[in-house]
Length: 198
View (tube, rainbow, N blue to C red):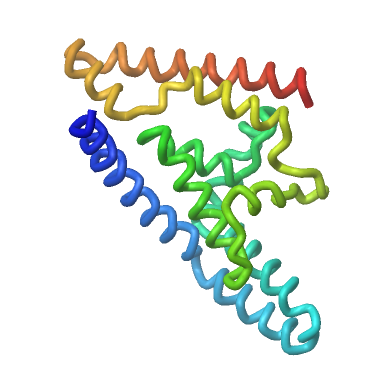
């Protein structure tokens, strides 16, 4: 058991580490100088309204994340995942977790720590609990949580499994069928669960 646990931790750990680093870069940089412009704009606002510096700093970090490469990717797929109760951050986590399911938690931690304030020291759970949509409604509701659980129960989110199926069948046909069928089924069932419970 110890050997199997070590193999899992080291194999999954490598994937999680690489994806977290890539995600950090995607979350920290933007096309052109959009992030620099946002920083400059909010530095001026903070100098004019120092009493609102905490609120403005939080708002600035959220704007930077939205205009980053990761934010652009998440916003691009958001219309497809919105009916499931997911926002663009969950969308980014869904994409990265196709490498391995375990990456979802690391991705959410990276996204929320990039956005979060430096001195707050909030746990990921608390940050996610406080996450709200632009209309003020919470992102993580019971319906959204159950929809996410159903998605992960059925979705084919393990690249290594697809590679093994390809090796065993000596064809890309079955891995592609597996990926499309299981992801499609996961999407439909998650949609059903969210729409029934919202």
